[in-house]
Length: 329
Image (cartoon, rainbow, N blue to C red; front, side, top):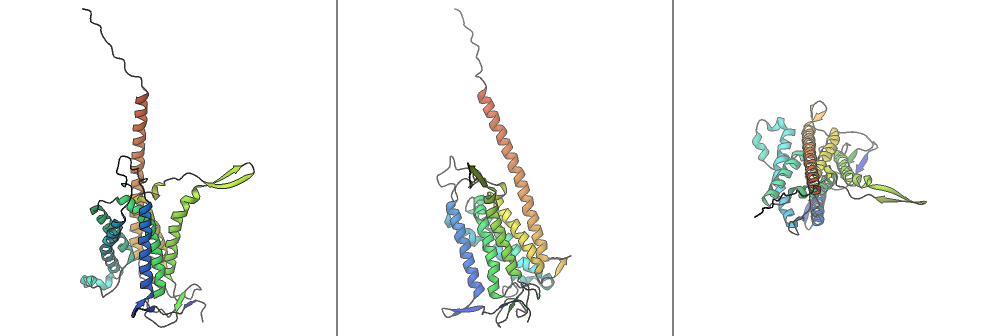
């Protein structure tokens, strides 16, 4: 027997008289965790992003938690449409004769990349209708999004979905018990693409959280005592406002792109799969928007600094003298 990871469990469980898949329960828990993290972030968010709340209402810098549910539900239609379009691109040979089959929910599945993109656009549209602060919502949603995408991929292990190429590598997985597994040929050892992607995405989330903290570390020396400390908090441009969400999308697309080399999908452009091509477009698009936004922010900041310097210079000028003429009568 090959030295692989053998998984021996039933993918379903009996719950209150119903048969429920383990991966479905896990995914529901992941969604609940995402919403909870976003709600906590919304409660802590104050008007420190992209300017304060000076001159505004006391609650102008806070995010309404009741808007979170509406925005989350608003993302669902876009995610479904994007998922079906992405699935159609992956299986274009099957859907080309009859594209109307894409509207049949009983046939086929969803692809994740376009689901995330169109779901985000729909969520932003709902936030616009609610007059919600979109930049701050995107800032708050960046962390929960990466955590949810990573844990969601790991939950697929419970259903045997997302298995990669067949392999006898030592880290390959094999489902030894018969059951309704999500991948074809689950009884054969294959690379756990879903676990690889989930781990890489969670690593990206951890890096986005820890790197700014590590860069703040300082070592202070007092006589012979050395103690660590933290420099004052700094707002990194790519980790503030909507740019933080774009950074999260770039990290996620890079992690998914790397994991996709282990997929079973057909190669369409050299060694690349269809979803990898879409991921490249997403990565480049987000990077371009980040770059343009950074240049615009730098331009506005410099203009504001020049205007402030000019006001200070004008304030230091002496008052102009007024010539008076005395009229003798």
